[in-house]
Every structure is written in C-alpha cells, then in structure tokens.
Length: 78
Image: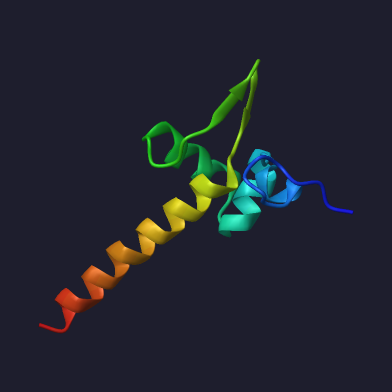
C-alpha cells in the first residue's frame, strides 16, 4: 500500500533524491549536476551535512530547459 502525504500524492513522489539518483534521472553526470547547483540553476534541500534533491525542482529545471531550447530552435529557422 502506498502511503499518502498531505497533498494526496504518493509517498514516493515526495521522496528526496541523492546526487546519484538525481543525476541519473536528468541523464547527466554528478559533476554536471553539482555545477548546476553551484550556479543556482537547481536548488537542494540541506539535511545536516547532506544535500538532497526535490524531484519537483528537477522537473521544473527540465521544463525550463525545454522552453529555452524551443526558443533557440525558433530563432534558428528565421
């Protein structure tokens, strides 16, 4: 049985991801993900010394990257 959180979403949907899990989900290496974190493109959640990634932040980053690429493609055809 999947536990529900307050928003009604499945428990696993709200689980924070490690650097390895997040980089695999994005399809990039861990070093590239850390670079995106350091320049402020992807936020992290700090838990003591650990840094975790909220899946919704990764989705937002991916959707934002899609919009940028769509604009570049539109400009290339002009």
